Image 1 (cartoon, rainbow, N blue to C red):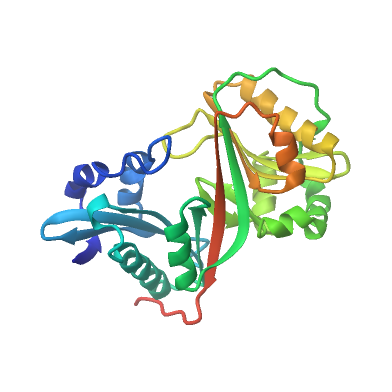
Image 2: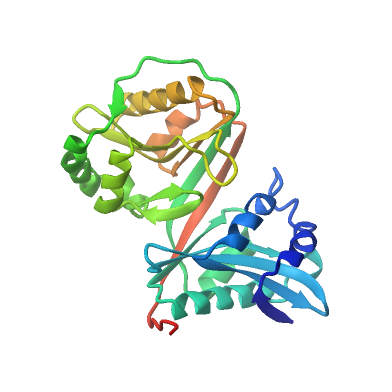
Length: 291
């Protein structure tokens, strides 16, 4: 068995067994070209006796300080043979050589074997997230929410420092299915890009991605959600719904921490897909950078 960087000729054989990973299918066909061409990371392929039997991808983010592990797929005939563990070791070694300080990944709550693998390799669950998706056209609603301006930055940051949901979210938000730190620098950039919505004198906020992801520009996403009251949450969801229904979108996603105050309202969301994820993280004890 050999683990090596992917080649363009690997694509079709790999995609042949990356089809039914989830109830709705898989996304590897949508990201293969992006991962293969990417310069900030590596797409790994496992080859055995001339056959491609597994893949994974590690992305380096935040000036190589954060490694994001994703896309571990193993051919059904080679599962339970520690191939995934070997891939995880290769991704961590690559990240460590490039100076990563932390590695993170998400795992479905239903994927018990992957959860065991992460725990065995020193990863800990730092947060639990829920995902909802709908393709239905939603009715526009009245809302008291608005987009934040730079003048709101200090109040928003103060709110987050006191927010239990922010703490339970591991202080992160989602971008292209990577979980990034929602620190002050990221918040400033998001506000400047008009991606942060708030209510009142900041008693709730949402980070909204109106541009889609990968090759899916017609998806509007809420990628962080935080509220202290039902009214605030209703207003934030109404603002996002109005953006969705008033734009040229095919789907709307909500990705947020699995908090009861949020999910009780989201239960009324006309979801067609939903899933629960565990966010895992591991700190590197030694950091060696490649020359």
